[in-house]
Length: 218
Image 1 (tube, rainbow, N blue to C red):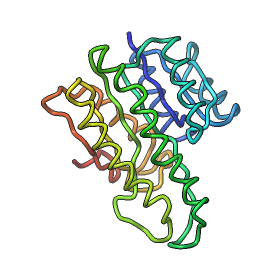
Image 2 (image 1 turned 30 degrees about the vertical axis):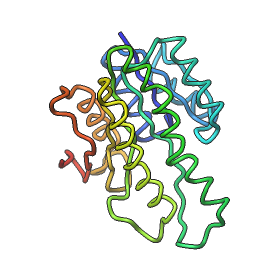
Image 3 (image 1 turned 120 degrees about the vertical axis):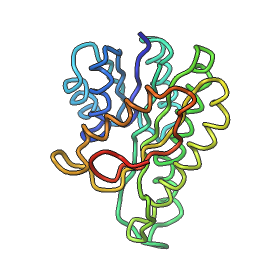
Image 4 (image 1 turned 135 degrees about the vertical axis):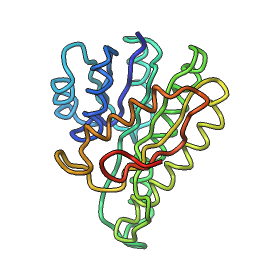
């Protein structure tokens, strides 16, 4: 069975998504920036999980990790991009360099990962790319994240237009609140939506799904 790759597999959505796909018997690769996060994710998902270290803002490292995952488990059926640079900042507060650092993770890494694997997924018969979104309402208190999540919508649309005809379903799950276990934004509940997106027949593909607490509204 073709596997799943989760980029940004820290505690929360990333780990829950990795577990959800692993429960279906899919071989899972988790990619994160630090060794500690990767080790925790591998332990949390279970035996047979491939853990790789790569910073999503480092193009060469990200591409190398994705290639290693393909070498080990084959072209994936699912790619989830969940990496994010989250910080509080107001308009004009960050320098240009600091703002670009956030966009490198929140937007550019998503484009890099999606464009790197989607052609191979299409050639293999299709697959699913899901990018974690957020900020349904822009907030000046988190300006860089607002810009990043707006960029995620654009990345999703562009990848869908480019690779959808080849059978690659590209979508974003826009999470409308703070993620925490046992709340309306429980990561395990959110992860279920990623699985359901992967199961959707082509005629019912959704581009963006809003998770506003409990079961998402569309």
